[in-house]
Length: 481
Image 1 (cartoon, rainbow, N blue to C red):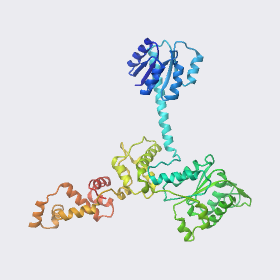
Image 2: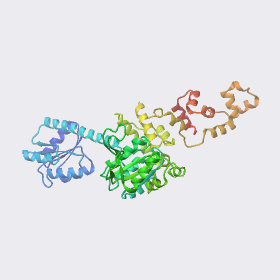
Image 3: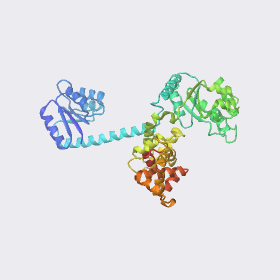
Image 4: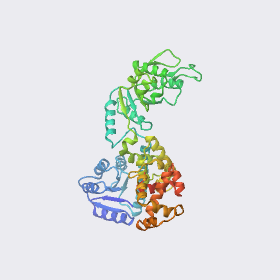
């Protein structure tokens, strides 16, 4: 069923066409002018518009132009009693889906709308696929609700227009590469290459070749000349990730390049001069590395012209919910499955886990959840056990609860939960009768004590005879951390 708007200044055409389309099950509205059609589309957006070409005032062709400009989601079919090849071609070029010649039969209308429905499905599928591509493409944009993060992004945009060398610091997995890409995309070098070199994954010799290139025969395995990233990225940006891992020898060579913007390939004597911007990143404290003699002080100051300190995920909790939803949708789409939402419990757990591995850890956890999820939403059991064990929930700790209830009802607990461990004296019997407990109170005390005496949630759940997700729910229910 589709929403259809008919535009024709002949009442008989409007009434007959409206009746036919209603019989086919469509929602139909009909008007006698292009101006009224525009008013209707401002109020409600139809799926299809059938318009006569020759009308008083605004013609069907003029209406088509307005629809293409202001209501591009509406599919237009033009109708006329004066058919010509030129008019049909012109209408199609302007964006009409089809050109219908009057008079027409109900069968022709039925056939037309079957094709229109197929066309609409294809459009919807294309839009869905485009959304998936956009989602999977990992665009170089960062959005945040955190004031400190927004201030950092504002600084990054300001320094992007300069050619200054930038040092991005922060914990692993916080998105330092993405921030470097934001700087590159906002710079005059945006149309140039953006080359990434991970300094921690390559040996000294391979890293030197990766940066500066080499000539044939310069070392074993160098069977042909190779351009280094610095040369490949000429007029662009080179991002040196984990810069704190490079050797003293490479530190010296990189310092020379930063000073003179020139270098020699491995095994060559010819000097190469390039124009690239350097952005470096590290999760190390380079000032301490300098003090302890592991990193050159002059290189540190050459790199740290402008420092951008990336926030950890713990420092930008405001963004965690939206980020989790985005990464989860991306994980489902990457696995070829329709996206499913996080359950309320799973989302709350994610919000209270400390995420020591930051965005990288969150991404990996949600990829796992997308693979394991078998229901209509991602539940606690789909998340890694370590998250269930380490998440801290707001409220009073289970130790405090246990202490408070133990002081008030300790002997009651012993008599009811472990009757064999103590005899029931007259005083304890009196305490039982004056402090009767609900099953919830008993369960709360028992869980608290088991948690006190075990090292992990997994061990506690095994003793209690429940799974981790059930234990997590009970902890939340009773306000335990």
